[in-house]
Image (cartoon, rainbow, N blue to C red; front, side, top):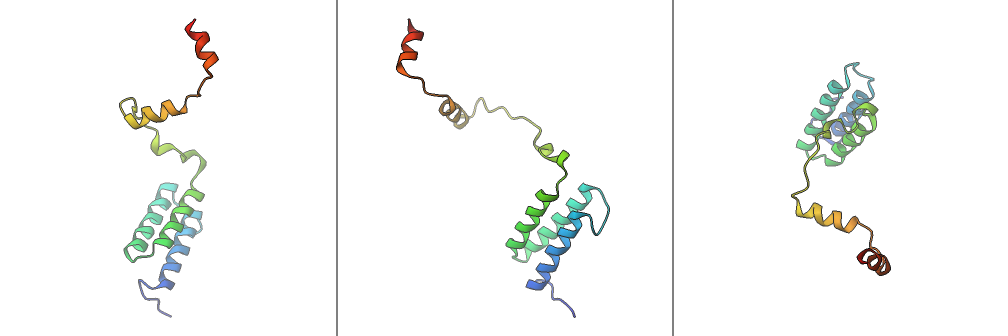
Length: 107
């Protein structure tokens, strides 16, 4: 039985394939290799309009991601000191003190 590229059955098979790749059942390559294959499948699904299937691939990427790789790609720290939105959030995060505490500081 031949499955037509772009059909719903094709999308289901692509999703199943990417899940098995991420779990390491199809190939025993490194995490980066399996991730690259899954991302290629995800792009193909998006090209054919299967966004739900592509989102499930994303879910499985995060589910199968090795514990040592969490946060590895966002290790660079940014300087938010000049961002006015960051400054406003920082001010809102500070606790509001009672008037009696403010009066004691002023004395």
